[in-house]
Image (cartoon, rainbow, N blue to C red):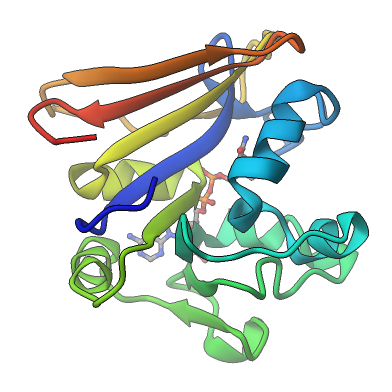
Length: 200
Ligand SMILES: NC(=O)c1ccc[n+]([C@@H]2O[C@H](COP(=O)([O-])OP(=O)(O)OC[C@H]3O[C@@H](n4cnc5c(N)ncnc54)[C@H](OP(=O)(O)O)[C@@H]3O)[C@@H](O)[C@H]2O)c1
């Protein structure tokens, strides 16, 4: 996914019914074994937490993503487990209006800046790697106007209710162009969409 144009990519696991987690933030229903995981390790090591890279003996090259942006709730998932710098190989930005810089790790920029303005600023950086929007649904709603690509890892599970892919409704024309769709033996289908009118 390298290229000259630096883009914001919402790369996320989602259920068949459009949830990225259950009501309590649990996403353990998404399978963590299978050939789609082999693909992630091979093609998207930049999206693996540092602890997983270490356990697997894999190195992230930051050639797909060199920056990750997260909402506070997404970042907070790792805190009870001691993961205050979940992606140490990436530049990490966490959006919050209620938490300050000292609530995060020294490697993590906790910011109350406007996410749209910061995304535009990051896109202007001189880099061929992209910006990963990790989640969650609330931040994705705010950043929707700046999302260039949607890479949905569609998991063969129904959650019923919980945290939606986009937490709020949108008045945007919902036109996206499917550029690739790969089905894995695990039942996960990875759909890669670009905003219509944008090159993949
Ligand atoms: N399936 C997946 O691949 C995946 C990926 C990522 C996350 N998740 C799940 O998603 C859940 C979190 O999603 P979520 O929608 O609840 O929350 P979220 O988007 O991760 O975080 C929301 C928080 O981010 C801050 N924020 C959002 N917009 C902001 C803005 N414009 N300016 C400043 N701060 C802003 C606010 O923090 P403050 O309240 O502190 O101001 C807000 O409460 C997690 O439980 C995680 O399990 C799943």
